[in-house]
Length: 365
Image 1 (cartoon, rainbow, N blue to C red):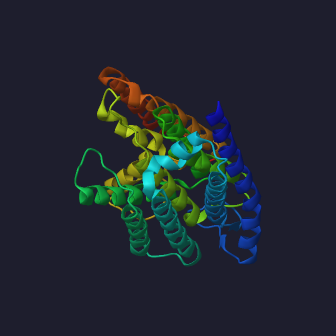
Image 2: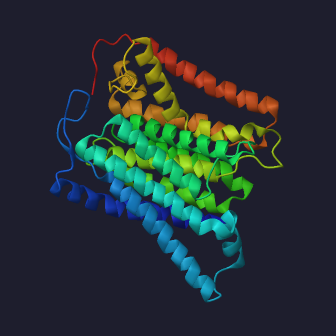
Image 3: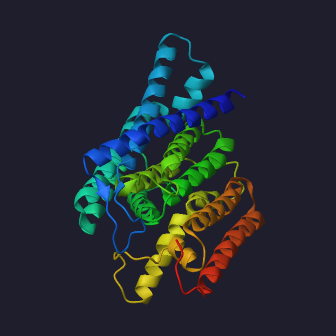
């Protein structure tokens, strides 16, 4: 029971801080004229504030910093419960602060790269370089994928590739009011449900922090949005989800199969599906894969007859259903794993058929 109170406290604190800081970021964004203007590939009809990512980054830092400070004070006064000392900070061992420093240093790098892109429109190569630097910072702090590969260099390279993939995938997904924030919140909840039974208290708390932060931002970002997260925000939440997935352990000696390591692919299935499907369409049409367009998952649902709100809610539903199956992977044997995989493939097959059967001549907003 004590842990559920801790989980609720972290989620609510993150939500409240995010909900308080987002209007502040909106005001600052308007005053500094950091705005997203209407355009051919944009859905809004007026300039929109773009500093939602600043509110999210500030929330991550405030919630983590305040609670670590509180825990240190309680520990120094011999008031912190032993279970809190062992299971919260003890999870990452003696290098906990170095790893946290690496996590947030990489987050700041990603945010700054995105902020510059929001203001000056960076070259794709420069954005990629910044993402690689953020991933490298994470790896050098001691956070890297293992995946049963003993070579730390190979693990580091895979970690950077994973960070770059998810950072860009979430960035591409941010194309409708409330879409990226809602999907990120669902993914964070899925990660929480997956790692909590494995006794990973520290990462469980961090996943809930991300969930609370994105839900708090969603109050102002769901259609009709009054603020956007910008590239700085979408890349930031992609980075945080990818990094926390690396910090989490999905396979233990008690797991029936090693397939549990696929949990992040299920939790983040929506941004991955959106990215891969868009790349496929662009390659098929012999177009540049970095050229923006309106062929994303959400856009095609609108073209099939849904309103923007319906498309976003539909994607939320798909993200939740596919993700919930993944929360069981750590406890399933091969037959159960295959059933979960088949279910996910079937859901996305239905989605593809739905979009392929588009007969609506007009797009409704």
